[in-house]
Length: 493
Image (tube, rainbow, N blue to C red; front, top):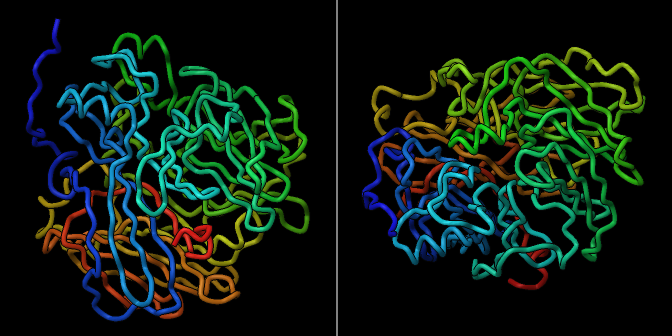
């Protein structure tokens, strides 16, 4: 019996229209047009990944999170910029290409697939560099390895047979001093399980830490944080129910009745029962900027927080979800004693009231005390929504500016690329040994002309772009990316 026919046209929905329309471009463009100038000391590659469906979904209302991973590499050297883009050749991408149609069902629900898959990964959430390989990460599976120069897919990567979890985080952390690669997986023993596995690899790629533990609920743990001595797991109250999935429902459902859980585990030499689960009122933890230990041995953890369900496309059991205009994420600081027997978290400090997300620090200060935080920012008065409203599409959170907060002084700078521009997650490129001295680079969608641009902003002159690099294509909103200096590419450049 054959599969039922599906449309070859993408539906006209907010998640597949305007800025959110699939890109589906693979190729290379050298010598991109540059307005302004790129400093010659910038030498490296900005890698980013976007969910980009190869085919229209056969299940309606497919969230934009379910698109195929399409990886972009912006090579910057000698004041010039070059562009390359290629899909990750996942099992899904390959099978669907052979079938000339979509086969994967709902987001993270194998019971809705048209055919069986061994690994359902779309490899679309983050692209990180480790030991001469790019790792295309999606947190429901092992990563896919790619060649950092050609972007050819090398296959699933299990760390030479050492991967202790069937899942892998989209946000591994590289210790800038020890060079340890610190990782975890949730639903680590399979979908619907409360198991969380923490593990890390040394610079030579050997597994050196491996701790399995059980979370209070089976829920999403998208990002995490690491200090010199602790590992921190913020649980998003999007919970999983296997019976709901078997009935054709969603993997995730917002649960407003459970607290915000924050797991804390010793970074080295821990056992499964050493984890503590601190709690705070129900809320949505976004991406972390960084965590460190202060002089009193307390953990200081800066992250985006919201009182609303940021992933509104997965509402609660009654179908309740906020509108995009209601969702505000604030830069928030938790300070607490990880050794305390009092598991109620102290009331956090709000560092910034503005709606923000996708924070970055100078990565050389990761896991240690930081003073500078960079992030995406939404100031609605900066954008001419009347003229670009139909071009925006829907589904993805949108931001129109970059922010730079200096914590010690309270200095707050904003870069806005224009009234018809939307901005994606930035990366930081260092210039000197001074923390925060360098450049931010971010992909910008120019909705006036319908193409994308790469903006380079000096952190010491945050008013205007030092360079605007123009692309001849429109790139869909992505999730995450990273800057890799040419000296890190193991001589591959």
